[in-house]
Length: 258
Image (cartoon, rainbow, N blue to C red; front, side):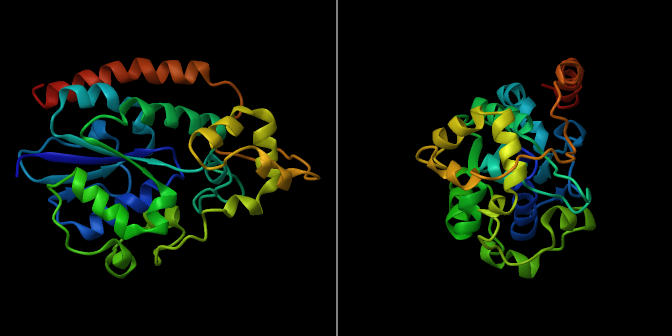
């Protein structure tokens, strides 16, 4: 097998850790990241399969895919309500993500969704029918040779501490978190009021047929909660990231002789 990188990306809290750990546990490979590793730090290799994951790398995949034939990508998408209402064990007492972060990732995924070396997957589909999603993955990436079924992931996974914190523990895949946002309505109402475009995104991506679901927010008092990502404008931060990406991209291509 020639050198292949299969990289998992998507908005934080969209199922990237679950997907990456499933790949590591269920497919033979020659190397993988310890929880998270940006594609820019993945050391080039001459042959075999290398598995890696970095959610926010979804923002930078398009130009890399254009020039690097060894790069393959799984991009995860999840209901924005679930993303913005999700908590992380390593960040106690606060929400992990907000709508602007989800939206940036959604745009990044849309920019690469039609690429032949990219597979866009929904978290909800993965937990509802892991075997069907596994078949989709193998159809898109025929270089994968199955060792274990996804529905046995919890029996064979050897996730490290960081991955276990992100997952909330390794356990059998279930659907319990699909509508977990219903337990965080004050947080959700605050985000909907601040970012009303979220309503249109739910319909566009098929999570809702219309806005009738908002009835569950009636009588709920919106509340500001601590969040790892700021709700304030981060224009200068994002500009700095784009400028740094130019150098990272150049070094990436040079290291691979592209």
